[in-house]
Image 1 (spheres, rainbow, N blue to C red):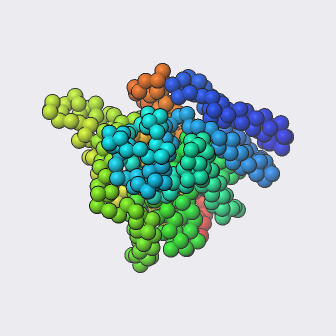
Image 2: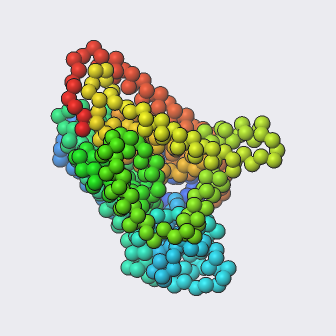
Image 3: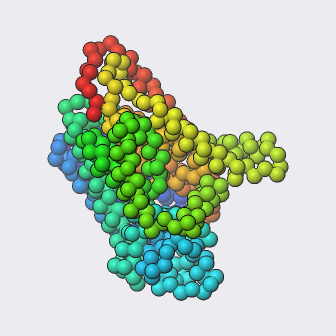
Length: 476
């Protein structure tokens, strides 16, 4: 690979193939045609691996790959998401807000039952919604973008989707820029991404097929959440805790998931710094969530979240195993699925508290304990990995934040998961909605093997470093 790294043919050839695959998957692929999706995605990931594990890329070539990653996302700005129908609920909520109606007040079915006409919310749009009987669950940052999209293009679905995608493209550019800053900060020292050096971790994210397709391609706001989270981590590294708290609130207002990480952050800062962080976070979040701070609105949102944990099932791992065991041995009157979901949610909460209390201080014996800015990414990846392992629903885009955060750690199992999660789209083969448990089992078997590899590699690094003089440079 090093022999080819300075030659323009390989980058140009790989780039051309990636452009073709992006256009195909973004504009022509069909979700029920799983084999076509699997083959195209597999080829794309193979090309990605060719770049990812190449050796000897020059600084100019790395900038080429960064530009290509942004360019591939820009290619998808004019496409309509073809692997997810969430965007149609985004437009529905946006039209409600534009009409002066609270998007959390009623589910979409209410407006059809009551024959209430809302400009832009047509019967055709209603038919494309995936959960019209449930209240929306999208937080304020999302709702603001939905509103802006339909205000810019009140009568054009394609135009409104373009606005949403443009916002997510800007967030993706922010994510890549922050990862590049992390890379620059570690230049001259051990890279935070073993196995990917000397390639920039920003390039590793920029070219990841899952991130490209699921964020800009399919309009998922995990991209916005990841951007704000990484900005918050960078601010913590720079000792700007108030700024970090603001970014954390923005991440929470894009997706509620960052609430999961709050115990990790607060316990890692120490009580005085944690108090300041908590006050700024609470104040910013209160302003952002002000439109939702009404008893009936909060109840509607809580009810939809409860239904999510009790009724929705997709691409789960341990949940499916426990559910099958429970259905085999539980009393006939017990609804195992409705009971197991909340129990696993509680177990996730307890696990996060344990992760928060157990501070991952060092990767080598004798090191000075790492500061919160260095320790947090590892704890967050561990917490999010536990959450996804116990979740009842794991859509492919849920893996994107895990992968993005993992680039700041030595753990590579999220990279494998970002490749294997495409197997979950077998759920839609032929236009049906049926889990293929064999392929799901294969997906999680690959992830388990990757976790085992990470554990073995960490032990190997510990053994090697114990025989060398230790670098006791303080953490940040």
